[in-house]
Length: 201
Ligand SMILES: [Zn+2]
Image 1 (spheres, rainbow, N blue to C red):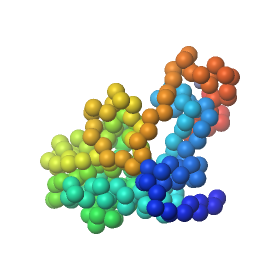
Image 2: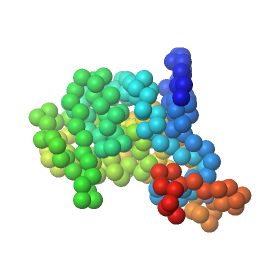
Image 3: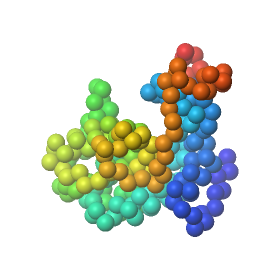
C-alpha cells in the first residue's frame, strides 16, 4: 500500500481523517460492531498506526496538548493504547507503562507504581470511556494522580461525554443502530463483522 499522504499545513482533525481513510482504518459500509450494534462506519486504528509516520504525527499532536499538564508518566491500556501511548511518552520524554487484561479485569502486571505520580491516560479510540476509567482507576488506587486523558479519536455519543474529560485529535459521532432499526439492514446490504473469522456466524 502506498500511504504517501502529504503533510501539508492542514487542521489536525483533517489530517487524522485522511490518515484513517488512506490506511484503510476507516471503512464505510454496513458493519456489526463489537457491541452488537450496526453502523455505516467502522474504525480500526491499528491499521493507521502500522505506519510509523502516522503514529508519530498523532503522538506529537497529542503531546503538544498534554504538555501543559506536566505529566510525569503515560499510562495506556493494552493492546489498543500501546503504540500511541508510547509515541506520546517519547515526545514528552517521560516513562510509558501499560495495563493489560487478565482474568477479565485490567491489571498492572509488569510494572511497579512509578515514583513520579502525575499521569495521563492515552488511548487510540474512546467509545464509551468505561475502559479508560477502569484502567486509570488501577493507578489511582495505587496512589497515583490522574491528571488527564487523551485519545486519537473520540467517538463517544453525548450520553457518555459526562464521565470523562478527554483531549482528542478527531471528535466524531457516527450513528449506530439496533438491528431492527438499521437502515442498511432495511436496504438489504450485506452485513460485515470486522475481526471475526469467516467460520463465525
Ligand atoms: Zn444493519
